[in-house]
Image (cartoon, rainbow, N blue to C red; front, top):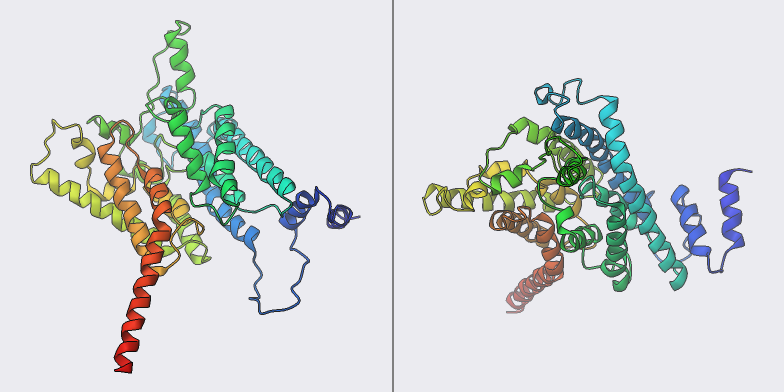
Length: 408
């Protein structure tokens, strides 16, 4: 008997029972649903929500694989075991040792994210008696990509439970939440465990453990510094990475945010498959560039001098903001969330522009944590319905004026 037949028999066996949603979710994840509509007008299409979610995951997989290599590369680079001059195309990057170190640290994050998140989804589905929703398929992949490599697994598990329950289920589940669940998890981690989410130790595998050993007198080795580019600029320090390192992703940072090249490839894939909104992506980039230009103008005018704590990030060339930090990752994979983003075309332009604009503003004015993308997106998630409301009302008023003119 085939797997499909076995799953179908289990589905029929548990039909109408408490555990039916769990078996239905497994069956429809592997195979197309066999339910058909009997009346009304419906759009005929080969895809469904699960397939849409899987398309986004396909766009994220290259970032995940690269993140594994980069985690190992940054680990060995910080220990002085390899030379940074070899770069992206060098043999020292694409070694099995880098991949093994990265997989050892990152795959457990993926397992915990999916295991805990889907367990909560299944639990709510069984208790409430509805089908398991597919929204967490993408969230489960996003979460490991937006956290430091060495974050304790129990912290991640607690944050995932909080994000799924408080960020989504209390609002009614997938399609009803007002905040991006992955960013809700990220925000919980940052505010609940800030020492594990910022600083110059959390971005390189082994740096925190080694620092603790040195502090306890158990090691005579030098401490590892894994400070990100944003952290260096915030401290008005010299940045040790060139622009190509930033673009290809040979820098410390969250797992999925470093390679801007792969993020752009993912963006093109989502636009081509009509899953992601190019309006939101483009307007977010424009908003970031405009805010960067404003800050550059302030520096050029002499209003801010190099003695100011804001000078480092204000003086960054406006275009460079796109290749440092997570602004591109947020624009492509976070801001475009169809549930929490604006729905109208004009609203998408406004929504995306404000995300980019506010992200750079927070990045510059918050030296303690110089990255404002997740805060900006969560803020605009809240205002997205308001933006759409005024866009719709504006269109209604224009139509009413046209009707009055015709009537006259």
